[in-house]
Length: 424
Image (cartoon, rainbow, N blue to C red; front, side, top):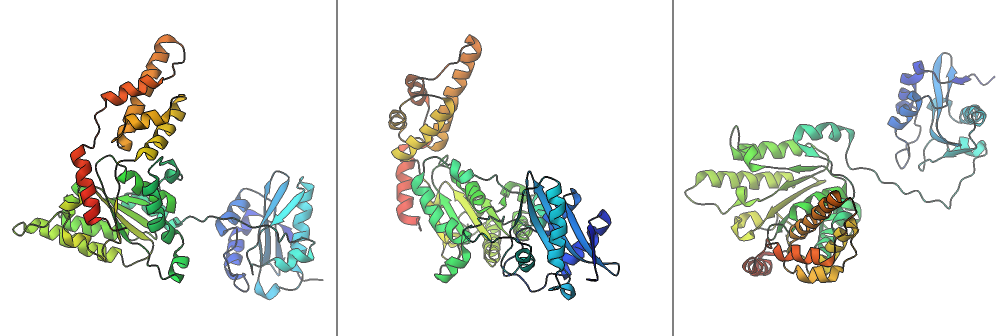
């Protein structure tokens, strides 16, 4: 007699199974289990087949599955340390397999991290290891604690895919991807090459060039929460300086976070000797940046339309790793932008011609022109009852009537600022 008996899991066993997961792991695996405890509990609460082993009234083992059609996944094998290597794992698998096969399951699959309990039992039960497989996994950078804190600190988790949705701007995307995203996404590899992780970046350029869009997209690309600081709101109560300090302290409680300040010149403009208020605000912001940079998993992104208005101390090395220009899109970028809008509208129009006609337009200008044409086509369809499709002249006429955000003088100023201040 083995000294145990195996039966179906019941809801009354849940607490004991959770305790077993914490106490009965045996030697630590090199990697966390492929299925977390929350997934094990979810499978049990949903009634997926599971068995437990009992000895002297104590739960000493559990095998839990999750059924998906005619395939079942083994999400956990747990055994108390004192009962290991006695055939208990194989016995539980045999009982669980009989229940699964009786329910129509034809394939039972187990995915274990190296060193995770259950490998020996699987081998003894006739499971074949498929060594040719590679498991691709992406784990979010946001913990359960972070999720509960997001709304409290005014942060949000941006939707995935924002980075891919940025049409055009290939040069800016390439620069930001390599300088910011790659080191933060692969910190251990960066450290082996002696690369210090970026903590702060200033994006500068004319209005409408997509600086705010890039900030959101970087957070989406990393899977980090996005928290925007609004100086006007922070000034309420104890004043802007204290508001900045308090806000940075709040968002710093998150394990990972991208903090964004748009039009940062409002709080980091050149300090005036007689204006003690502005001096205090800038000083507090500089101290907050130093504290913010003291921990991994954080990135401060500031945006400004005119980098010359920023306090020199704000831009120095040690506070911001990069000062990156984001200017109006070049011809290739405008072609890509127009192609994305033409595809949405189902328009068969030469994007090259539209890109040439919209020289000097920002992404926001192109978006406005495309929206204007789309709205006109929609109204025409409603009025006539027939699907209206835009022609080349519809776009060219709208482009001619759209006033570009960036003037020639602004373009020259941006080129000058890029030469003087860019740090890439």
